[in-house]
Amino acid sequence: MATSTAPVREPVTATAAASRTRKPFLLDLYGTAVGKKYAMAVSGIALMGFVLFHMIGNLKMYFGAADLNEYAEFLKKLLYPLAPKESVLWILRLGLIGMLALHLHAAWSLTMLNRRARPVRYQSARDYQEASLASRSMRLSGIVVFTFIVWHLLDLTFGVVNTVGADGDFVRAEVYANVVRSLDRWPVALFYVVANLLLGLHLSHGVWSIFQSLGWNNPRFNAWRIAFARGFAAIVVIGNVSFPVAVTLGIVSV
Image 1 (cartoon, rainbow, N blue to C red):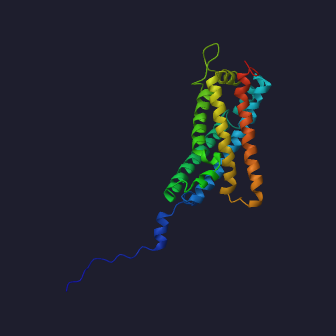
Image 2: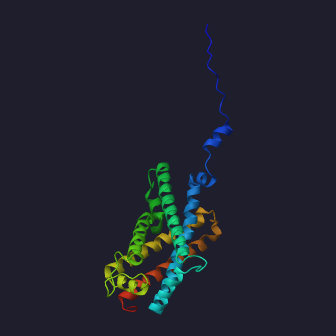
Image 3: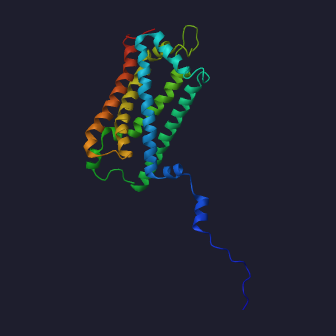
C-alpha cells in the first residue's frame, strides 16, 4: 500500500492565532454591549458639557451686541498667540464632531443588538406604561436634535439659511445681529423652541442613563440621579428657549 509523502503541517498554536486576530483593547471593548454603553456615557458627558457652556455663553446676548460679539471673538483667540487664531476652536469643534459621531454610532449599534436579542419591544401593556415618555422618545428626540444641529450650523455658522444684513452679505463677526435676524422669523423661532424641548427630554433620560451605564446605580442615589438629570435638562432648555422668546417678544432686537 502506497504511503503519502505530503508534508504534515504543524497545528497552529492558540497564541499564534490570537496574535493575528487580536484587536486593540478599546476596539475589542467597543465591540461589546458594555463597551458601547461606556462610549455612550463618555460621549454623552462631553456633549452635556458643550450644550451647557454653549447656552451659558449665549446668555451674553442679554448684555447687548458688543458683549456677545466680543465673546465670539474670544473663542476664536483661545490660546492665541501660542496657537494660531481659531486653531484651538477648530480642535474643539472636531472633537465635538467625533463625540457626536461616536454617540450616534453607539446608539445605533446598541439598538441593533437589542433588536436581535429581543425582536418584540414590549411584552405587555404594563412594560410600555412603565417606560417613561423621555425613554420612549429617545429616537425621535435624537433625530430632531441632530436635524437642529445641522440647521443651527447652516444658520449661524455658515449663514446659508440666515437672513443677511443691509449690505446683502452674511457677516460671521456680527453674531448678535445674525441671531436676532434669524430668530425674528417665527417659523425658525418655533423650530428652535420645539427642538430644545425635545433636547430636554433627551437629556432628562440620557443624563440618568449615564449613571446606569457607568455602574453608578445604587438605589440610595436614585432620587439624586433623577433630580440631577431633570435639573440639568431644565437649565439647558430654559436658557435656550429664552432666546427665541426674547427675540419674538422684542426684548432683544437689533
